[in-house]
Image 1 (tube, rainbow, N blue to C red):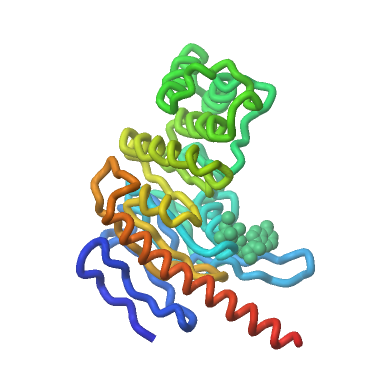
Image 2: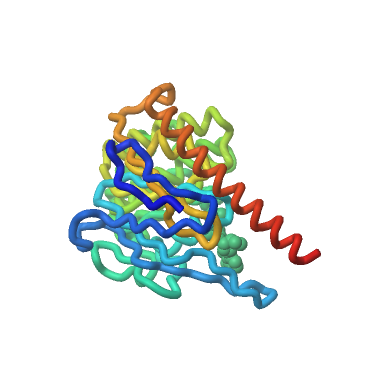
Length: 299
Ligand code: ADP
Ligand code: MG
């Protein structure tokens, strides 16, 4: 098995041999842990399924995310991406290891972390602007400031004209933009997103990817974005972190140093996309081989 070796240039991936169980990659910043915005330290999580079977979902995952960094987590379906994100969000607790924000343990969900899911959970009986105002009310924003702040964010995501529309009157892409405006209007320190553009058509997806890039450039918040779309990850991220097949752990990372705003046609990005695709394919092949082995065992 080849060992990881240090990258010679920032865009060069760390090598990993996927032909056997890969070693966990400890993606820890070369600085004091307290300087990281988010940290996972050997975090593990297993679920007990209805059948009683214990399913290890994440295995000793270690990662630091720097303040203002845009990290994309990518990996095959079922590898534990959502579990990692939910542990950071405080929606799931690690069985072992630690999950920290600003060096302090994450004890549960909090207004410092906004989460964007694939299905935007807007209240169907409230208009778009009222949905945002309601979130701001829960955050304790003064009544006189709510509408102004909500409209400013709707303007930023190009939805100001639809402020009074009901969610069902919007396209799926517009609903997701409304959810993004709602999340960011609450001024979280961290935006966590779980395949938020996964259900959109290709064109809407590209528009939203560009808008998200713009929003990150303006806010410079810390973003952790889960996707299984390699092109999306490479377009958006400062760093793409690859997860192994379940139980997921971090096995490789690619730093993307192309300046922003980026274009989808950027040839440097295309090269990284090909490299990551190769890694992912090997992971998926490893899963297929394991499943085939399991089927042979059962026969
Ligand atoms: P991903 O987001 O990468 O597709 P998940 O984190 O959703 O992966 O899931 C990782 C593994 O844990 C999968 O095998 C999944 O079936 C299992 N899992 C996730 N959530 C639960 C749950 N609530 N109960 C039981 N098993 C779960
Ligand atoms: Mg998921």
